[in-house]
Length: 348
Image: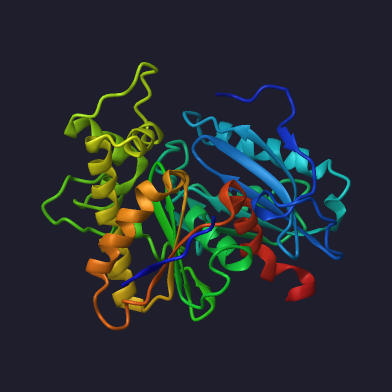
């Protein structure tokens, strides 16, 4: 049986929201920065663009963010990125920065240096790596681009729950479903940076059409959006506050609501099928599950472990560990830094 490891609009002139205290990934106690170079990091998503400085041991020293102008054109979006870089460059530690890593919503193309985030229509085949490299504070730095889910995998492998494992699938289950792969101890990105894209594995060939063009994809069954939709279709109704999100469905499931429990069970079954298929293809030691939906805890992980034991039945898949991610909201920035760490001059 698969095991489960438990751990008990346009920008205004205001400066970016800051969290200046030095701290380790995952919100651990503050610590002194490691000596040597630092890595600048950007985490670009549909709701926020975050920036930070990370040391070579993975400690997140500073972070700040601005809202993403999601409906803006390519110039407004790039202005938001520049705004974050401007604020990072004002930090007294900036002269120690030796590389910049970017984790972006995707799809991305790391060979071309472009991004086409589904939820940012202003960027289609946008040359993010080249545009970022033109920022005055970045012109002399190596810039490394990756997808946000791959960045999460890099973070969890460097500083989080995937550290003990040489072969791991790291999932982000949130508004969508993304994932990255660690194979034989090394992050496996694929030629374009999209390897491990679990959300668009089809697990129901007669299922709902997916915006990607396929049907029955894991994302259409297991994302937070899908859980909320499934619960409503089954008859779940929100409480007096009118909250219809997956978080509200999780609260109802914990209280025993049968429709909410069924929605999470369906999501867990789809995730389990996708994880088992991946384990069968590449042989995994562990599946690391993070993202906002994973905050549901046992409501998600209990049926996920149960279904995984029924899908991962071959001898080389049965020992797969199912582990909650450790780094939480820090994973995007720590992961972007992990992508750029090999480009530091001292490590090349």
